[in-house]
Structures are given as structure tokens and as C-alpha cells.
Image (cartoon, rainbow over all chains, first blue to last red; front, side):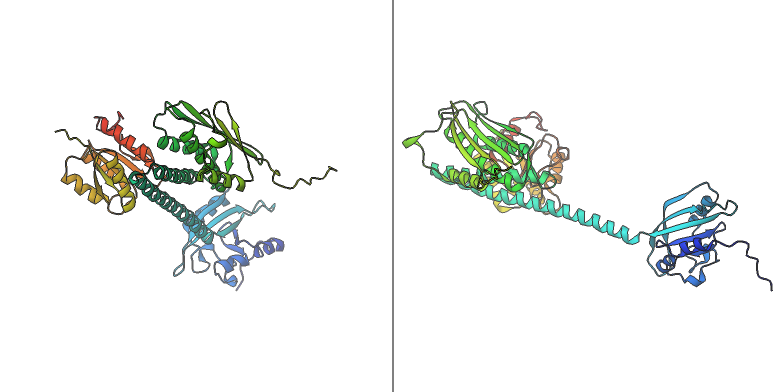
Length: 350
Length: 130
């Protein structure tokens, strides 16, 4: 019985390249018969390598590659009218999970213009897709969790603020009421930061927005006549770490409370100006009022908790605090110079 | 019929915050009612016709949160003024009934009483004059 004549031989090097391809790869004739399949193809899609060569694509394995869409795309590629690039197709096999495939097909360009042959590269993206989905789910879960935590923090701060204000309304002593109000302002100062953080990305704080909100909150609760007293905020474009901003925010809170309480007696009209600027690692924060000025010497009031808080925070920030007569009023300037707190043993031979 | 005191219904699931809000309403000189969720708030609104303003939290257990409650109230009792507070820092203003006021928690008490006074002073049902 005569064997069918083999008309063409493929170059051994072409076949070797196909078979050894890392990426699952099929080398097909124009009529979609398999000339060669890569070992990686047979491994990935569980096809016996000895049963592949010479068979139509639709018949290999258990016939799962008999996909009308794939066949039509390959025909279009062979006729030169289309090129399959990153075409997505599902491989459906009985009693096995459907795999998501991305296929790329092109004609082989080896100088032989008379015979069209096709290269079909197949990437199994099932696991990558599942991983992406999982990652998206995790990101969404994290955002929900973060939002939940922020709600809880806001609610907890509200509980503290509510308790402090209820106590303040009940106590008889003016001094005790003042302390409770101050405690309330400190809580609101931290709440303003929390709010700023919850709307910022990457957990960094825009100081201008934070100070503006903070001073609005202080003004709303402490200034009864906005035409008489106002707080002006001037801050550069600094964006800082939360720890740093919470210290600055508490310093501003204490100094603004202090100015509002002491600098403008007898319905005096005035302004408190907050100014913050930075350059590299150096920064300067000033709180200036145009009130009656600080009493000096024996008239100076005893330092309270507010002063203690400010001093401790400034020390912690390696800052330097100065008190000046602003004529009229008082200017408190807190500055930090990089290296100012360090021993000055800089080499002279520079 | 003109009452001498405006009636404010506080809706808040957290006991301490609700106590604080009721205290705040009383200190401001209004009559205070309280509910711990939307369902209770609706029962009270159905039982009494003299409620002028509802001050509600957003995140609450029950069939409706404070946002849904505020829309429900606006539809069913249009003259009732609304103040909404939430732990979420930003809430789309468009998601609230028109004329209602929003405050992030923790809210400043003066800001709340100020908003109450303005809303209660305006005769405009949607409160837009405030």
C-alpha cells in the first residue's frame, strides 16, 4: 500500500525552535493541521505529544481545541486579512476547570511564499486573572476596612467630645468649665487632623488645609462675634507626616486658645495670625496676635497645662521657641533648623 | 397653633452621643425627643405632629440609615428641617435632601445649635433661606 507522498519537509531548526518554546506554541499548516507542538503546549494542556503531529487542530486531545471561533481566526490569519493579537478565548474541557487563554497567531515568515504556515502562541492567563481579581478584592476590602476604622475613630472622638461638653455644661466653677472646654478643644484639634488624614491619600497631611480646618473649628467654638475677632491662616504648600502635624496642630491649638482667652479683654477687636513656612528640613511656625501683649514679671500668669504641652512638643520637635512683643500684641515663634540641636563639630577643612 | 418651644428629635444609636446631643438641644432651649434608630424615629414622627427638626446620625443599625431616613422624612413630612451628622468626613451634599445641613463628626456644638437656630427661623420648608 503506497504511503501518501510527503511533499514538504520543514527545516529541522524551525521544528526544534517550536518544540523547545517555553511558551505553549503550535506550528500549523494552512489547513490547520499540527506540524509541531511545543513540549510546553503538551504539558500545559495535557495532550500526549505522540498523538499530535499531523492531526487537525480540532482533533487533538479530546477535541477541545475544535473551536469554531479559533478556526475562523486562523483562517483569517492565513488569508492575510487579519492578525490575531491577544485574542481571548476559553478552553472548555469536560470535568476540568475552564481555562482563560490569550492567543496570538501569525503566519511564519521563512521566505517560502508558496506555503502558508501558522504559528499559534497560547498563554494560559487563568491564574493571573484570578490573582488580579483577588488583589482587586483585597484592595476593595482594605478601603472598606479603612473607612470603617475612620468612622469608628470619628464616633469615638464624638463620644469624648460629647462627654466633655456635657460636663462643661454642668459644672458650677468657671475655672473647671474652662479646663473642660480646653480639653474639648484639644480633642477637636486631633479630630481635625483625623478628618484631614481620612481625605488625604498616602497618609500625609496638607498643613494648609489642616490648619484652616483647625482654626475654623477653634473659631466656631470660641469666637462669639466673628466681626470682632478673627483667625488668619497662612501656610505654604507643606505636606507632612501625621506625627509631625499632630504636634504642630496641638501647638497651634494651645497658642490660639491662649491668645483668644487673654489677648483681647473688654471686647477688644483683633486678629490672630498663624504662619507656617518651611525650606528643606527647616521650618518656622508663628502665632501672632495684635492684642494687649503678655504681662511680664510679677504680673505674668502662672504657666498652665497649655504652656507645658507647647514646651514639651517644641522640645520633641527639636524646635526653638521665642516670645516677642509684637507691638501691639504678642508673637510666638517656633523654629527648627536642621543640625541646630546637634554638636557643632563640622570639619573646618571643607 | 404656635408652640413656645421648637421640638427637636435626636436620632443616634450611641447612647453617650445621644445623651450629649439631647443635652445640647435642651441647653439651646428646645424640647428634645430621642430615638436610637430610624424605625423608632419614624414611630415618633407618626405619633407626634409637632416635630420641627430631626438631628440624625448616618451610620445606624436597622432598616434605614440616617441618609435614607432623611429622604424618607423629607418626602413624608416635608416641613421638618434636617441636620445630618456622620463619621464620614466627606459626604456628597447631593446625597442629602435639599436644604438639609451636614456636619462631620465630631461636630462642633456651636455649629450645630447655630444651624438649628437658622433652620428653625426659616419658614421655607426646604430650609434654603437659612
